[in-house]
Amino acid sequence: MICGFDYGTSNCALGVSQGSNVQLVTLEGNHTFLPSTVYALDRDLITESVGRNIQEQQAKKAFVESRRNALTRAQRARYEEDIDDNDQVLFFGREAFEEYFQWPEDGYFVKSPKSFLGGTGLRTEHINFFEDVVAAMMQNIKQRAEKQLGEEITHTVIGRPVNFQGIDAEASNRQALEILTAAGKRAGFKEIEFLYEPIAAGLDFEAKLIENKTVLVVDIGGGTTDCAMVRMGPEYVVKDDRSHDFLGHTGERVGGNDLDIRIAGKHLMPLFGMDSTLKNGLPMPTQMYWNAVTTNDVSAIATFNSMETRNQIEQLRLDASEPKLIERFLLMREEKQNYHIVRNAEEAKIALSEIIDHRVLMDYIEAGLETSITREALAKSIEPPLERMLQLMTSVIEQAGEQPDLIYMTGGSAKSPVIRDAIQQCIGNIPVLDGDHFGSVAAGLTVWSQRVFR
Image (cartoon, rainbow, N blue to C red; front, side, top):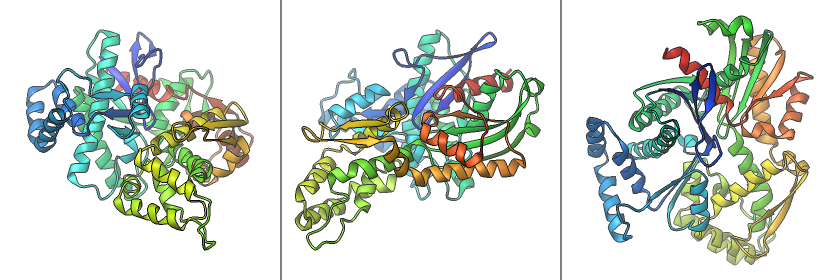
């Protein structure tokens, strides 16, 4: 069986063709998308799970040989924590969030691992671990889909951003695609192709057009914003060679996660002392606060979790004019609640797409701890990443050398009226249409899979 696989930064989705129709597979409850999260009782149990789920024997043998040290540590963790072979050790999607919220300091939680792919300066063991995280997630999603469909999935087209990272894009993209390919093979896909995510989103939209249009496709994903200018419609959809229809594309590592980080920093970190002062009247240093919420940056999180940062916070508690705020910050760090805070910011962003004032409750930190965020305040706090998104849109229009007839928006953050208003002000009075914010990329990848594997 053939599928389109949207391995997204924030969510994953998988589509298959049923006759001439594309169907998104139910992955969790009634949901056709699964949050890109995993919670493990121990980090090395992720690697162990991948090895156990590789079906092809030669591939399994090679994997076990390459991960011998991690697999030995996994066995030690099972012994020390008294984890039985039949115990559930990995949790995915919403279940992973639930486990993390309940036991943040006890297990190993990963959110949006796609954000880390293509990072510079990664050692071999880091790359191997990212391969294992991605493979574990792909194995899980493929197994869920096959259970629903009652059939093995062998071929897939996986979505990819235009650029995974901003620095040394060519090497970054090569490394990221190698990780995705290795993970996909270990998940059991026999053939893997890739397609730009904004083009995939456009293919899904094209099937609904009744006349030809030049469309600016804007895909604001969790980790990247990707734009494509595409000629599409009844005259183009029947063509096998679409290379001349794609007039330009841009992409950068700025997406919904960056908006969440800005919201968390500007609106939630002040509860932990970010905007307070020292006894000498100087402002509180802010870098440690940004490190706490920059959950899509391995080095930032490593720095925040370091002993050096802990010592810095302890010293600032003594020097602070409001030491209780710093004590709250220290407690949050010790209990590893920073991912929960960024989740609160994401929930606020989603809520403020519908309402103009949202109350954030943080009882998990301290009884009665809360704050309110207005849509207007949110708009101001996300200005820097939003400006970068708008630059990508204007750049692809310049590449194409013409204005679009309409703008097609997809991706979770594309629902925000703040973003839509900014686009209209920047690009002009061009119709803006919505796609399935969580399923259009998977649907387009499925359409393409039927072409490349037919």
